[in-house]
Length: 241
Image (cartoon, one colour):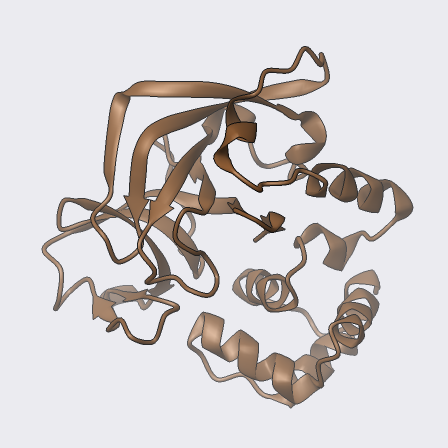
């Protein structure tokens, strides 16, 4: 099975033992994960979608590479990884390439420990290569870009990074653990969500200095606005989720 061999390959590339990778996955999902889980996945045992997201995030690679690391896919990914985000100016450069999509960039910022403010009537558009959107299930018209203020999602997402969100736009998201843009107590925030069924949603900051919240006991209301598709770290180029 290509997934199992790719998982082992990228784990070795990252210099991680099965135990260390298990610890990283557990920190992301919030559920018990051991080296035996990693070993079984590398031996071909089926993997849950939430664990696939966590594995890719722990290994700092796109999920696509766990299934397909062919030269064609690697070329596509490397093409858009060459975007250098040394400052914000690149976001508003125009391009005449026909092989491209248009993304909406909203004025204002979403919060990561700070209160986000978005001016919905004030946005700009940028053009990105079609290779930027590798996931066939993602519709480019649902992708929107926001700047981040605050440090509650450090080290995953830093102050002044940009996040690209797959907006709900009336759709329902599967309750898969991951990083989402949410409305929490009437503020827009980037947070990691852990879905617990009738026990509510755990709202987690990757920065351990910030407390974990629960939608049933700590918040008036939580609404999912969209799911993180990828993000751009200013100063270090494109960082895929």
